[in-house]
Length: 527
Image 1 (cartoon, helix red, strand yellow):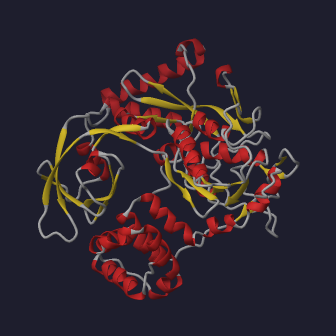
Image 2 (cartoon, rainbow, N blue to C red):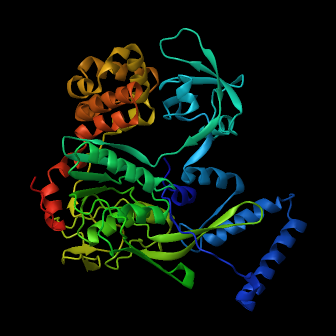
Image 3 (tube, helix red, strand yellow):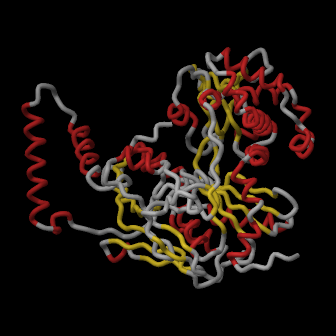
């Protein structure tokens, strides 16, 4: 994935989205801006009249808008009409289509998982199914965007796809009636043991608060007495949903976050309410370099109020609030209107004065407040509600620094070329009997040396070259990823994550830190 594009920063690093009313008259802002616009129009007219080739006025204006916004901050962006629809669907909580998670593998779209309750699940599509035709047209070489354009559509309309299924000699057609498809923001929620709940939140969308509340209730019913909240890789979303999540965990009357900007309507203070449901449960929040914006609001509030222990590595450091303003042609401008601050007054936004590439690369710098070499020396110091030191100046610094094991290049290649995914699909197809009992699979199934060799043989057939010393170094990870992908194809994403956490250094470290989490929160954990 290319981290060095502005569109990725705007969309994947998410942005805290805040809905405010913006009404303005451009030319009422002063004579100077009117003069500059006249100068710009003069340039456009000259180019249109004299340039050696005929120019596209829309392309010129699009480029001018993007150039203008590049003078501001990395998260103020222009969104085209076509891109806007796709972005809105990512956060609205539902879309209309057939309901599959997929990747393009070996030039063909391959199903990772049918979404629960979707038309795809109803017609029996499986993980590993390869879509070789859509409406009679070959999908060879199609892009992910191309697949979406062909499969999305109005509820009640139909689409016919041709499937090549592992273990089947001939492809077959399936006609699917499109429907509304829910997009969930909680990736997984389950009990790790008899008292530890685990909730992983992938993003903050319109349904996050409701999903989180339901997950808490389900885990309570299973005996949860302590919680790991996994916000790793959560790139953000709606500010209000982050506030609603924190509200479930903080006692009433605690400031969760506040925003400050140039216009009065962008200044807001958000406090916890009587909606709190879990103020007394020991809490650990996991963060990493991909945790940004809304996820940093939750982590920052938990840390500043000593409500939970923050474990992992430094978060991304995205502390700007955007408002999305619709333009007349159906496109939109996502403009930064405020900065947000944690309860102790920390601005989480990192500096972006040195350009976009530096901004992104610095987002992967580690800050370890407990390291022998003081990595917090140049960080502004703040204090939590009980006087603990916390640090501003860019991202949330964890209370306990735990870094994930780095992977060798060969292992990364296997992941990028989706070798584990493809092997998991084929193995699961041949061993459907394993699906009888997930607990037995989780606790007793072992990936042996032959299975690893089979994965390497598959990699070789796909033209993926690996180094044996890399495979030996990452053997435990490779075996776990093989097992988790088999679980994904036999059951689903929840079971995939239940296998993954068994060897997850940050999760396993967190399990040992609940007494510390309870201590800073002033909780009595005695049964």
